[in-house]
Length: 155
Image 1 (spheres, rainbow, N blue to C red):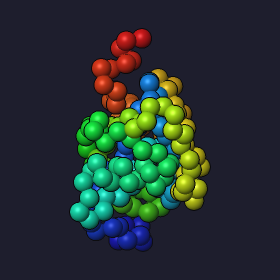
Image 2 (tube, helix red, strand yellow):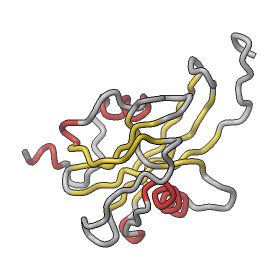
Image 3 (cartoon, one colour):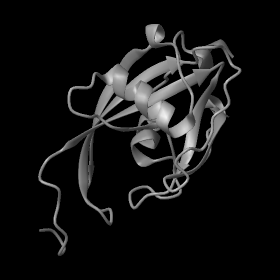
Image 4 (cartoon, rainbow, N blue to C red):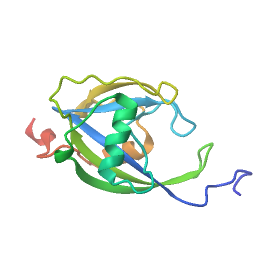
């Protein structure tokens, strides 16, 4: 127990997706006890027996109704995130995947889980909304770039 709150004894695995379109990334505003009202990537908990790619595809479909090109899905990085100060202390190993839309740019994100998200939209990587969910914010501030061929360097 820490400050009267029981901390989850086991780290959980989350899989999130940098879904890219041009120089933009898909983000949604969280509705959660952890990171409420911050902008985050689509994603969720890895289920037993699932691959990272399967989890990313399932979560994206459940949250936005969108599909991406599974052949172009890539593992980008993994981070270790301990939320000890939050109202609900937790520990997540987060797997970051990269994907692009399956049918070009014609799919529109739907908000299929309105109790968990205020809605999805595309944001230019050079002009991200604030506040970002802190694991994503930490990556952005470190200079992480989810785009192949570093599009920021081309400008």
